[in-house]
Image (cartoon, rainbow, N blue to C red; front, top):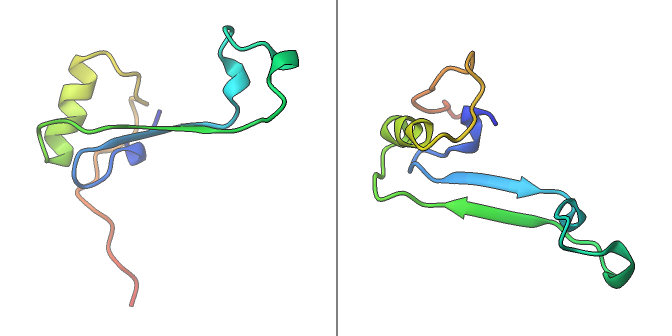
Length: 75
């Protein structure tokens, strides 16, 4: 997972493209395919502190990804 999955407010957003990745779901009993989005909102509303908290909890992150303070808007 990349650090870009964490927004400025510290929220971690993860998406799963297909719900059939879960072994509990039988493909033959699921006529519709759909994706799942999960947002983890920490009490800490700071991106840098959130990255540290998620790392302490063991959330896998790319080691070479820098923690950017924010993206500049194009004019």
